[in-house]
Every structure is written in structure tokens, then in C-alpha cells.
Amino acid sequence: MVFAHEAGLAGQIEVIHHETSPTNRNEAVYAQNPLGKVPVLVRPGLPPLFDSDVICEYLDTLHSGRPLIPREGEAHWHALRVQAVAKGMADSGIAVRWETSRRPEALRYQPLRDGHTQKLLASYDWLEQGLDVDGPVHIGHIAVATSLSWLEFRGLPGFRDGRPNLVAWYEEFITRPSMRATPLSGETQD
Image (tube, rainbow, N blue to C red; front, side, top):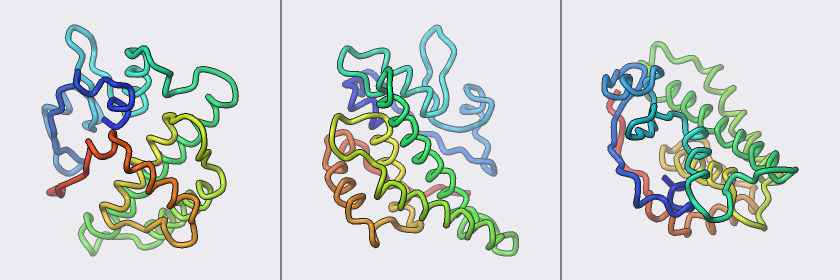
């Protein structure tokens, strides 16, 4: 939704929240996405789109402003590389969450949690050095900001210690109207 706000399309999207997870099957979501995951963009008369990356790429074709996914050259590859780091952070954050609070304690595997924690810390360090903080907003920025926001919201391993560039960039980015319009709230039930 942050991408939709940045593209000026949020007003054209009706958001319906669905809870779903591997242990809490949601039939309405599975009917649209065989992976049972959200988000899913339901398009009238067309097949649904799922996965944030695919949905954002589609939305980028629907507005007349500057593309949020650079179309060519190193800017394209840099934005996608930053987006990939953000997606990996989210995946590792989900894994840490399962191994610390969601899986029954007797089934938690500390080496897996520790390995994913190290991936998070290495990603934060990479972003401290490799995130382009000047220039126009792109898909990578949106993905990093939303991933960091979710990681912090869920109390997962933090990025703030020893990373002043990343912290300063993040603190500025979260003041954007797109981020303020999409606050995180709630707790999943499984």
C-alpha cells in the first residue's frame, strides 16, 4: 500500500484485511493465491496478482508519474537489488518470529533463529553502506522502509545500533505521507 500511495493509486484500491498463515488457512485467500499468502490484488475480469513485487510492478504501469521501478541501466538493477535485500530481511524476520514466539517452545530451533538473525544484521550493515539516500524514491526504498517498519513493530532484531546513516534515512522516510497512511497494528492469532 505504501507503493500505491507513492504512485497516487491508493484511492483506487479497496483494502480487505485477511489473516492467513501456514497454520491458519484462510480459504478466501487460497481461492485467489495457491500459496495462501497476502497480499493479493483482485482485478475485475482478470486473474488476481499476488506477491508484493508483482503487484508493485503492475501498479507502476497504471500511473503517469515517474516510474518507481527504474526502467533501465544501473538504476534499475540497484533498485531491484535493494528490494531483494528488503525482501530477504522480511523473510528472515518471519523465520526469527517463528523460532522465538510462534512455534511451540519445544519445537523451536535456536540455530535457525540465530542464522536468520545474522542475516538481518548483515543486511542492516549492507544498507548502512549501500543504500542510496539521495535521489528519487524507488521500489527498493519502499521495500526497505516497510520491512524495517515491520521488523521494528514486531520487536525483532533491531537496526538502530551503530547504523546512523540507515537510522537517519529511515526516520526521514517514515514521515512520508505514504508511510503515515499505512500504520501497522494488530497481532496475528496463530
